Image (cartoon, rainbow, N blue to C red; front, top):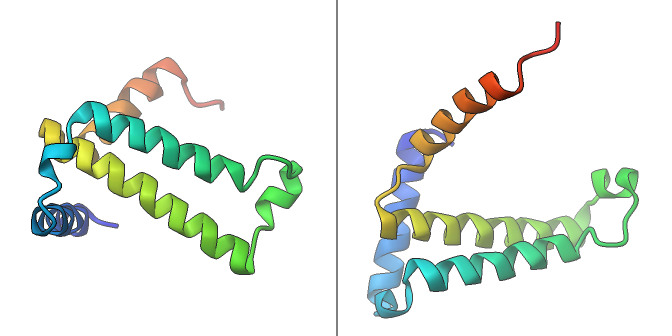
Length: 106
């Protein structure tokens, strides 16, 4: 996903929320709590799987995982919208910090 398509997704999300008048519920606090619930729902799909089984998820189970990934992404983008955070810029800056903190192994 390039930066433009991510911005388009963020705009779609704003329009979706506005059409339902949900903005009053979308404080960073509420969105963060909802995000944590969705992350827990994602984790639930892998809870009792072995490492290998978790890599082989397919079919209906993979479809369910995709939906949870989408929920996580959408809530994260809503938090970014509320706090005026550019998620791509924030991620790129974090990668630079991580490269210093965790140098590559030769």
